[in-house]
Image (cartoon, rainbow, N blue to C red; front, side, top):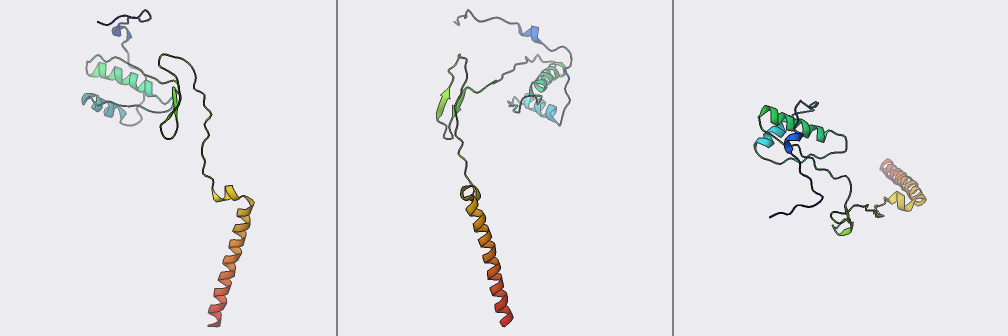
Length: 150
């Protein structure tokens, strides 16, 4: 039997129903895609930057399914408002925040950047480039004079 925590609260899901149509303007066929996935019980992951309308879309679809299909659909929102762990490129954990803890993860990451030939050789690369162009012109001149003689 489950025990009740002293910090828990009881909520009635009926108190959080959406009665009137929320404002939402479809961009493409996302309503039909969502409805089809809902009917087939296929999970959907909405991913995108802050402020792109993910929550508004889910709110609208909750109302849409409740009103058009006459099914009661609770609106549940799950959000990750920060980074709780940092891993390196191999997946090794560098630093984390334990469950049920609050805090910040601050790590100085040294990003490995592959430098180009011109970044590593700076002024020498310009000298090399000039030398290479003159060398090409010299070869072209030699081949031109060889063809003229024949």
